[in-house]
Image (tube, rainbow, N blue to C red; front, side, top):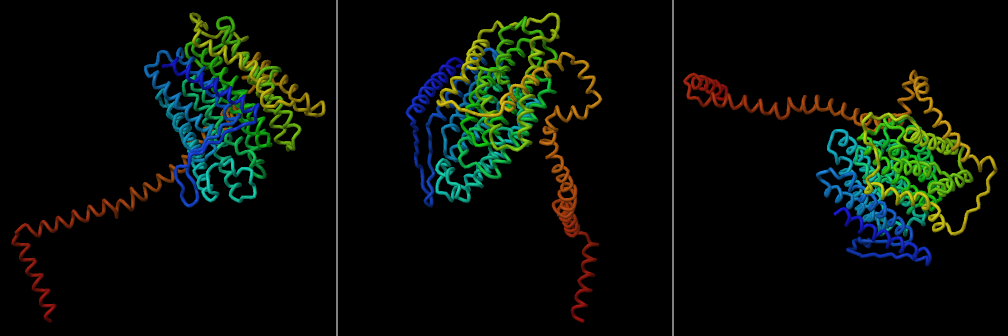
Amino acid sequence: MNLTSMIFLMVISISSMMSSLCMLMSDYSCYIEWEIVTINSCSFGMTLILDWMSMLFMSFVTFISAMVLFYSGSYMMGDENMNRFIYLVLGFVASMGFLIVSPNMISILLGWDGLGLVSYALVIYYQNEKSMNAGMLTALSNRIGDVAILLSIALMFELGGWSFIFYVEEPKISSINWLVGLVILAGMTKSAQIPFSARLPAAMAAPTPVSALVYSSTLVTAGVYLLIRVSPALGGLEQSILLLLASLTMFMAGLGANFETDLKKIIALSTLSQLGVMMSILALGYSKLAFFHLLAHALFKALLFMCAGSIIHGVGGTQDIRSMGGLVYFMPLSVTMINLANLALCGTPFLAGFYSKDLILEVAFGSILNEFCFLLLVVSTALTVCYTFRLIYYSVSGDFNLMTLSGVSDEDSVMTLPMICLGVGAIIGGASLSWLIFPAPWMICLPLNIKILALVVSLAGGFIGYILNLMAENYFLTFSSKYEIISFVGSMWFMPFLSTRGISNSFLKVGLAYQRTGDGGWLECYGAQGAYASFMKSSFYLQVAQDNSIKVYMVMFVFWLIFLSLVLL
């Protein structure tokens, strides 16, 4: 089952890649529409768009999914419900594929909702309290985006169709601005931008292979991909708001990752930071650059999650990086691959992340950018390298902190083979994609101090991240007196609390007050219980009247006499 699914996905990946190359060289795209019914000159139909962008993205999604399924054969070996897990992953890939090739809002909703439903099923896969809380947070955050898509469908009814590619380049249509605003809201919920960021680290309760798939190339990038498709209509106020929120998300995630100790949550926060990079350059109007970084990021982020899963598997299930250290002597392949992915994430020259991230930063520095967003971009770049080198310290050069008797190794070829394949992608993927997507090189002229700014802040961030952890004890003693600040920064600015109890607490208090005064108070007194008491009392008097008692008859006779005398008089 596992091997068959992997081969099937690899065939789709190779065929999609070949189709994308042919379409890219011949500047060809295919638009397929099947009209099902027409109501009031508005046609309901199934629509597919096959162009170089959708085919290339489909190729990457299916390739990473095939690697994840092969990897799961060993990682999930002891699971009793292995087939159910594979079916869920395949359902997830099918939903993502449906979303990629759909330019129609109604058919997009099917893939969009499919992603939300299957992601909820995968997050609660282990069926414990932590998974349930994370799954509910994920599902309810996604529902906001689903409502935005539904409202955009209703808004597009007046346009005569739901294929947004016909309308995004028509800014004169008044409803387009509302439509773009709703799509931006939907994209922000899916890609976990502020204020919907809390669900991304919480969803690490899912199995690691799911994290490798979901948080590299599918669920969280679906919002970015949808915004790339509608990017010609972006502009004005919504573009400025998206840029500000994306820059804040990038900064918040980078800052939080420097105080996080859970290995998977650090990688999740780095994903959130890179999503902020994609959204910010998209808000500046460079949709192809955002798509380029989306694909390059998918390769090394899937590798990063797979290496994290291999290390967690090897060290006995612990995810605390403080319990690791010196793993290079026991797991050389896994540590080499995780450091390769980390360096690609930092934008180390000639790795996958360098070609996209360096280009994004230089284009952003040369764009019309306010000082606040410029500062957030620069500081976030430094923070990325800072938490990356912190992770490298704990996995490579730190002290070995595991128990004495521990069999740590990476001899499992089923887990290491997909890591090697993605490692090759992390090395050559960026250069290959830059040649494909940008056949003509960009010439970006900047002053020397701005040109080397990204390199300088990266080196400074790496130095600070490594040195602070060399003096980790003194570092934590220095900041132990400022626990409130550390708690605020390390918990994503209290966003997990604000997204759960912060929202529900006030509503629950109001609901309790209504329950006490309404359902449990006046409505209970004069409603069901009051009516019940009245009927019981009336039936008691009626029963007494029907008991054939001479006393009752005599009293009733006296009352009748009094009544008749009053009437006759």
